[in-house]
Image (cartoon, rainbow, N blue to C red):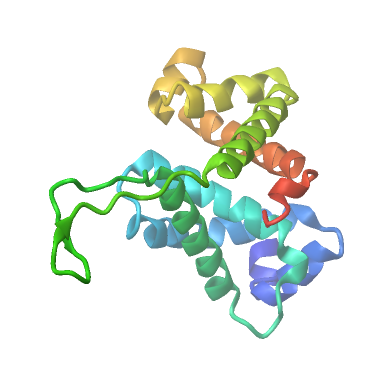
Length: 198
């Protein structure tokens, strides 16, 4: 069995980079549960954990040529997972202003600190541009992938609900979401605004 013959991560990575991309499934199978443990420490919702684990492996696959042999593959993968979680949490975090907490100024007077939003116009334009690119990228997906992405991320259905709605096995939902996200990530990387994607 190929997993027994080529159990060394570095060897598998080298072979993937030389064109045997199907071997990536070995690494995914080997580390998927461990990556979920790492993500679960930061994220509570189990469907989000599953999504972020899949996203971690998509990013790892796309960045595999930059992996440095000698550096433990698992540690490299954990770092990608952690960064993916941080990005996820950052996107979920809303800017809030507390009106219950007073702050002292230099004159010992109390005042409420309100964030100056006057320079946010550029940010809003950038957000709108990113949203448009993402919408267009989703629209360019094959129909079955477009549907499953919209059900998960627009309708916010969990995996079980998607499986029931589409009348397909839960495993098929996970596999199709993985493929859909990989296609989406590849499409988004073509735009300079998303050039930081792995």
